[in-house]
Image (cartoon, rainbow, N blue to C red; front, side):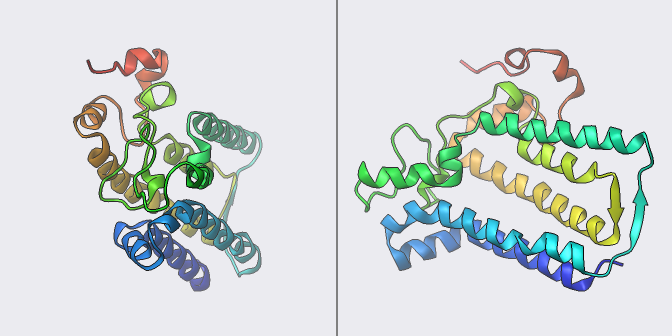
Length: 231
């Protein structure tokens, strides 16, 4: 049985992460700190998420645990190769992501360009009108490359990475299950946000490309063929 302290920490982390990402909490921060402070929100959000993740490997190492399996050779090497491929997929996906905006650094540069009272991101960014966080904007709907195979490649490769571990224990199994559930549910919330931003364009994209599991046949085609842009 997984250790209750680990379960409690993971559930607490997921709960806090969801709260900080929610529109009502962002709106409360904007009312309390002012619109200009929202330029710092994404960076602060990422820093809090990263710092609170640090105790997790310590808990996994120190808490009592029950081993479930250890893949024998050569299967352990196959699983490790799969993890390496998943990590490569994550890095490839990040190359097609605006990392400065994702991390919250680009928003700080906008302080020198836009008045602090402006709650809308730069004109080249599409913004969710219900979200006071300017980092909620995206340059455009990316539907080519890996996004022509699966709508949420970061979640897909992250799920592969955690489940292809050649070693499994009760605590690690509980962690993987909770993280998978969180990413699965989180993908639905992200879908709602993107539908608000891009409307019919994203709805058409949903009809063409799977949400979390890539269409196997799509890997044999060029992304542009899988995902043709609407006129």
